[in-house]
Amino acid sequence: MSEKHFQNRAEKREKAKLRKGKRKEKKIRKISCKKE
Image 1 (cartoon, rainbow, N blue to C red):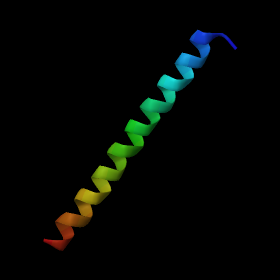
Image 2 (cartoon, one colour; image 1 turned 30 degrees about the horizontal axis):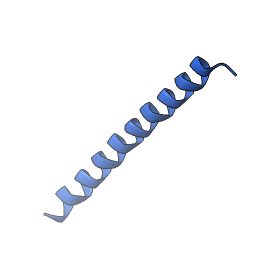
Image 3 (cartoon, rainbow, N blue to C red; image 1 turned 45 degrees about the vertical axis):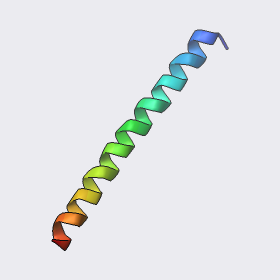
Image 4 (cartoon, rainbow, N blue to C red; image 1 turned 135 degrees about the vertical axis):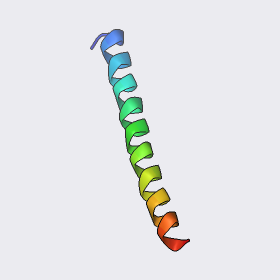
């Protein structure tokens, strides 16, 4: 495994985390809207 390949995998993981985080935020926002 080359270092560049490993770096690309790390970046993809970070991007995936951000995408999941955004989805979670949307869900939380929907729930809080219902409560109000």
